[in-house]
Length: 45
Image 1 (cartoon, rainbow, N blue to C red):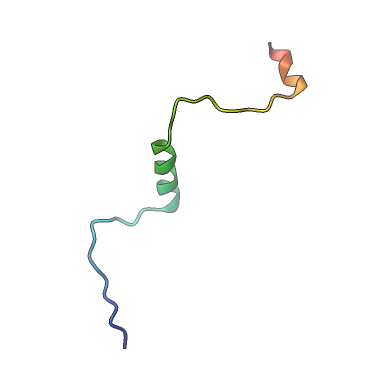
Image 2: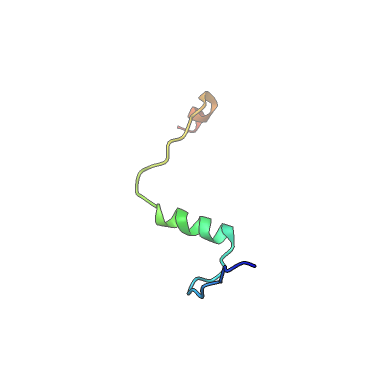
């Protein structure tokens, strides 16, 4: 017989995608994104 007990906690069950998006917003910084430009993309400028 197991002696494992479930401890009550204040944490709610949150879907993975909600936690993932929350982590992304916490990591927001003001550095510009690095993109790869292809020769055809330079036609815009």
